[in-house]
Length: 413
Image (cartoon, helix red, strand yellow):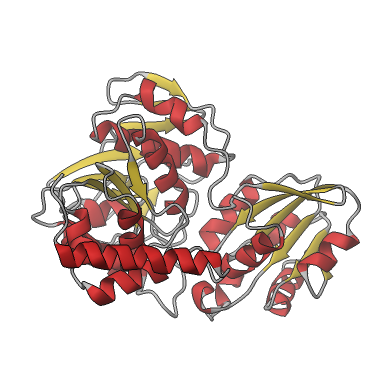
């Protein structure tokens, strides 16, 4: 691999120093400030760091941090991998990730949906992974149809190999201008943002109650492509019809979907499933997600849910016999608007012991009350835990609430 120009070397080194100081002083993990310093000194640093690397960009509304981790774990079978493991998914985070392991021949970068066109243009990544699109942070991000349209424009005419979830009509539309696409039937449980055809606006016909059913527009030719890879229950089915039992440590249907997409991505790098799968099975926690922590005999499973689709998947891995703590904030990274809470069907929690906390606990309490779900309102996460008897507890929190809970337990990962 050729050496970076001197200015880029200096910018990269100073960025790493800033990141180290940030960690040492307890200000953060350094994954953003290091990149910002580097880009300030060399605005074209990301392009230079990405040059000659075999890169995959991973973008979605939900699951991109986990899928990035799974892909990076698989590709370690081929060599060193530079990756933004903790979700700093904008250009500053990408600079930090690539700068921290400049010698790695491979890179796997989680990318914010809005930034994907810019990052693809800058890095000229060879592989792009597109998983799902649903409403999220409407006060910050563009409307999701506009995001899909930006993806279409960014991919048109590029040689990148796209790995796309064909069960999501918006993702299919966004990926369909790419020169080469591997279609994955990864499933889509949340349908509320994809009842209309993004091509013509007509109604989409799809079978209810089937996770990866065919879909088609009633008024034009837009329809679900034939998948190359399929998630079928506990198995991934490859393009040759071979079945691979996943046997993940990560729980839930969503993570099996993430895993089959990771296998398809690994295959795009020339890595066979029999070599990739053992790496995927080693992953049991991702940036605190799915971690189990203990305090005074209370064993808590930590789950992150940032939007309606994410809450639906989080409910899938909770246990109805356990009490559950829900925590919601509305800081900048969460989105200030909490109206999305009304799109979540909380009736699944009826009959459980539900504790509600977080900065916007009153918003969530009102939503639960309307849904007919009983709850106990508490001032803090610690108060909720103290009020519960020893035993297993499920915890679901949105982004900043989740990070606050992680901090209480020493940022368990």
